[in-house]
Length: 212
Image (tube, rainbow, N blue to C red):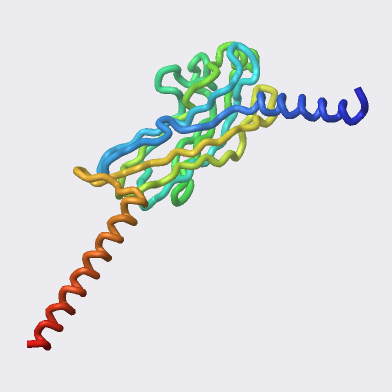
């Protein structure tokens, strides 16, 4: 194997190791459909961690961005509703945490684990909910939830690379649906056609009157 082939193989191995070490941050549900006036609960989920081994997560600081014209932030809670707080394995409740609004259209989720690295690596689940956000639905339309990572660390204090996935929220008025863009275009063409037809009818009436 020549030098160039060796470099190519090395770069490929680095690419594979980097891709495999990245965790995933996503929303659950990823594409909720709701009605105006409803309450929407969305979980921020981390996955692709080790199962009974590293990597595990010991700290996170996330900004969740949302459309204020569509949603109003109501509350937030740290931890998985079923598995419990996976950064506080034994439920001591000593971890520094924060879950709340930090500005227009932004909710911050933060936690720093005080558990031993060995406990987190062995007992922490490989996929769980970091926190749950609750919103009131204000208006009909389509909006997006985005995740911005301020920090995300493993048990050795090293940053974790993360694949970020957004959520698309479709809201409608009670008894109605949100028309898609193609539907809106067809409606606009139909209205334009009706208007044109009425103009032609008026012109035809006018010409008949003149002939009489």
